[in-house]
Length: 146
Image 1 (cartoon, rainbow, N blue to C red):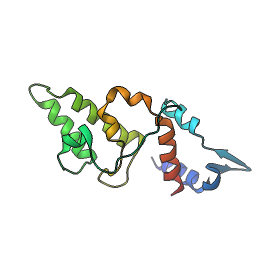
Image 2: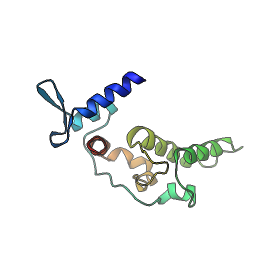
Image 3: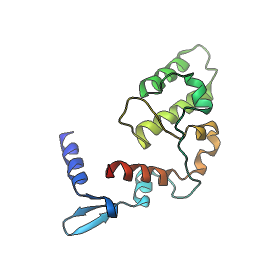
Image 4: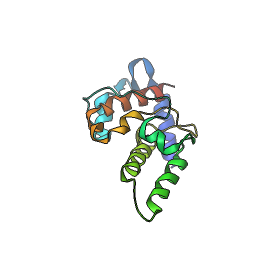
C-alpha cells in the first residue's frame, strides 16, 4: 500500500495540467480519453452525461430527504435484500449502480454525495447510450489538476 501511495504522489508531482499529461524523463506522456476508456472498458461515444446537484428521480425517492452517503446506500441495499419479499428489484439495481458510480467512476472525498447523474438512473435501459468514458476522463483530469 505504501508503494502505491508513493507512486501516486510521484505521478501527481509530474502532472502538467496545461498538457494533460505526465512529464517523465524528457517526454510528456498525455493521458487521453481513450486511455481511460480502455482501462475501464467504456465506450468513447454517446450522449453527454449531465450531473444533477440535487437528489432527484427514482433514486431521490428511495432516500426521502436522507443524506446520501456510501453507508446510507449500503444500508438501503441491505434493508431491501433482507426483507421477506424483494418487492423493489429495480430499486436495488439503481442503488447498486449508484454505489458503482460513487466508488469506481466518480470517487468523492466528502462524506455525502452532492452531484451525480441521478436522473440518468431513472431509465436503466438507456445507461449504455451515454459517453461514460468522456465524463470519467473529464472528472479524472479535473481531480488530478486540483
